Length: 320
Image (cartoon, rainbow, N blue to C red; front, side):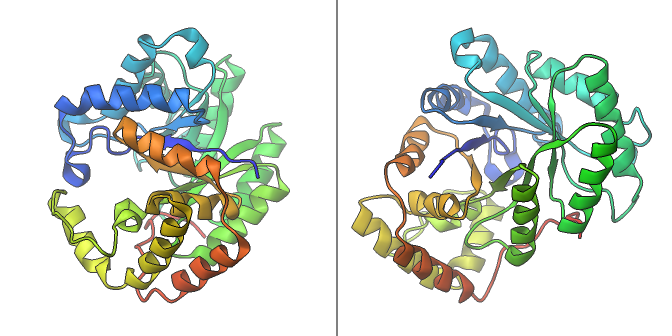
């Protein structure tokens, strides 16, 4: 089983949901370095990550960390960002300025550029204009691969065909994918299209904002942001049966609940993007490389997942 993991950095500047504090930057640098040491495949960010005055903070931090990273380490990993197709970013030059800003923030290392979501619901032609923009940037000499995020199967196939006419291809697609994620059958169709076209299929939020890491036997210590506390309360009972099943497997495997959730992704043939903020979390997640779910364990998790009465909300901009 070929296991790959990406490091997610949505929390690196998000005060509203993740209660980011600048004092945590030392921990984030250690997290970054350990991810490289442990063989993470890529680091995923976005130009929209970072709330208020911290807009772009995730990219800025990664750029600063790269400046303090030996070349021998940097060349082991790909840096991927997502550019948001805001309604005002239109036309064949709509992403040129945002791209160059991200490129600068990331210390000129940008290996994958992804459209953060599809504009199909508010401007059906915008996707094609912005993708043409990315193709133009590649033709100008910038060296990066094209990716997509929050895309549905119908739109994905159209974009594959569109880029083929320009002699370009999609390297990766990322969608929400976990034991609690919504529209799992739709995501599986996306996954199948990716497999047919040799596109890497990435799953973000594989730990469901941390809900799947919550030990069913331990009372929550309530040290999260207001919004995360609210989400944990809402999903505590609906996810209990699933987490009990995960706990039984984690006890048998001497592994964490997080490792169980990640190994479920591996079993499904998904490359998980895991949001991490501490070196210890990286080390724990990487222990997932050391064992595999059995077919019986996988079936137990699948059944428990299907029985969950409440799924996580989907991305409102995800296309059909």
